Amino acid sequence: MTTLSFNNYDFTLESKGPFSSLYFNEKLKMAICFADEEYIPIDNFKEMFLHVSVLIEKFEIKHLVFDKRKLRTFHQPSMEWYFAVWKPAIKNKGLVNHYKILPKLDWFEKAVEAGKYEIFQKFSKEILNGIRITYVNSIEEAVENII
Amino acid sequence: METSYFKEQLQAKEDMLAQTTRFLVQTQHKLEEKNKELVLANKDIFDSINFAALIQNSLLPDIDILKIFFKDASFKIMQQIGIGGDTVFIKNTNNGVVFGLLDSTGHGVPAAMLSISGTLLLKELMTSMEIDNPQTLFNLLNYQLHKTFNNSSSSIAHKEGVIFSFSSSQNKLIYSSAKGKALLLHKTGEFEELANTKKSLGDDANTEFELFDMKVTSGDKLIMYSDGLTDQFGGEKNKKFSRDRLKKILSTRPGTNAGEMVKIIEEEFTIWKSTNAQTDDVSFMIIEF
Image (cartoon, rainbow over the protein chains, first blue to last red):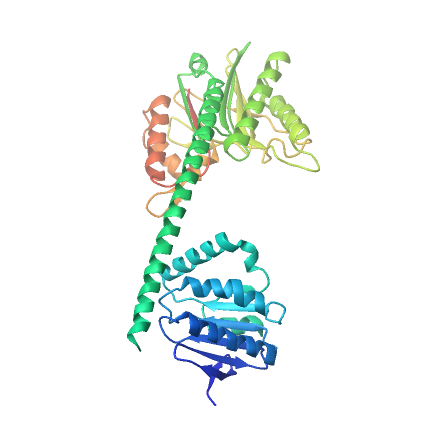
């Protein structure tokens, strides 16, 4: 069994795909998605989040971290699917916090901002309701927030 | 990794770049629109301030009144934003002249309003009640300021300053000071600190300001100034201009008349301040006996 440790909490590997991996800690009710490549094709992105959905229901996961530090390509259709399909579907399943870690690249942050702006234009800001999204600098910071 | 993955990633990168560019162009347009609005709003504000400064400056006294009684006199007012709380007061009486320098709380528009109301009140007291005693003027000004602006629920108007009354028939100079900043430079080069009631005007309706005598001889210089002059940060080590620096400027130029000395202080202040922001309204007045 592969585990990773953050703030003395072990996270167990739940699934590993070609572009991402998913870990969780049952006690903390926390899951961590890692982007393992510069780009995640949309089908693999959806698959990863469907794994997260299963985890949320199975272990009552309340906190999700998405570590995107390895990403170098922002994919708008994936982000739209996340906001318009996955988030509403997961609503009321118990997930409270979604922590996001971006690569420390100004242009990437600007691309995310541009993507969000287009989504808000398309779907309105109501789409943000429900899960609290917080940007953090590290997984340790996210864990620190909930313990 | 398959070629199709890199092709898809490349397409996603191109889409991302196009989307970000679109967003940045839109943001730039919005910023340009906001900037236009700010430029217009800024112009309105500064037009208003410049006109208000014209009004405030038109209320400044004529320095030539003092030159009737004394060898030379000059003053300089440098408000932080064109208008402000510093002012000088000069008004002739039946028997001489009343003059002084007053610094109202804060700076900018509210300080200018307090400054003008204080000046008009002093003029009213002198004209309608024929008061020329500095102590009485300060006691009444203090009472009126406190009653009008400062009460149990708010305290907004305070002034510091010094006011003199010169009687030409008696050749006598008396004054009252409310934390006023003033120095007397004797012809011999020695400085004399002026006495002071350590209370601001408007703080407490019951304050009794003291009356002091001042003995001067020909060649002595009286310097009144606001704390904006000595508290200005600048110089190589970003320190305050300071009272000591002011004394040094005054004492190292013994033969300089009041008009020239005011210009020198202004120049020294400007050099000291350099590119630093002016932190307060600044004023100073010099009388040469």
